[in-house]
Image 1 (cartoon, rainbow, N blue to C red):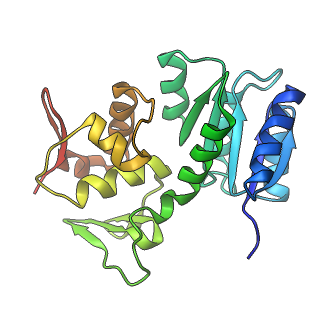
Image 2 (cartoon, one colour):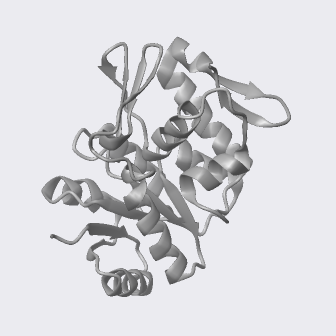
Image 3 (cartoon, rainbow, N blue to C red):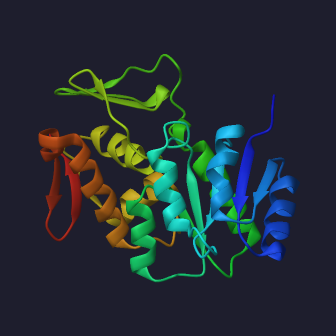
Length: 229
């Protein structure tokens, strides 16, 4: 079995060496890039399974790289973990709105970063759904967990890995109300340092992409969210 390949983008050589060492120690194949300009050509040449992206890059910054990746047909489905010294909520929410799947703030624990990598790479298989698992049918919405696909009126929807995980979690339990923390724990694991605001961002993104069908995701004031029965 081939090893999963990770592209690490950071302009600090010591950070690249640290991340490369710990990822290779965990069994991953690692490629490195020191500037934002080189990311898209590298991805098109040899697509990685995941990208770790520093936001504070010289020249083309990380948020611009995120926009370019999500606008590119060959790159848009590759999960991205933001690695950033910008720990403010606004910066994190901006990255998540652009389609990032996770974030790690500097200074960081290499063990935590590797754990986040494992979690994001496992996400399409979350829940251990076998290949023959039935699709979830909710009105005109069809969610196929084993294939990590969503169709609305027969047309495929482009969701980020986190948006898919949130939708599958809520739609799999219609009528149940979940707090933001319960949603975080279900789709990312316990003790994940994410703000309530970022859950709201993913819900807003889902509703926008689902159009009128997004009304099925209901806000329960003072509690959280549920998928309407």
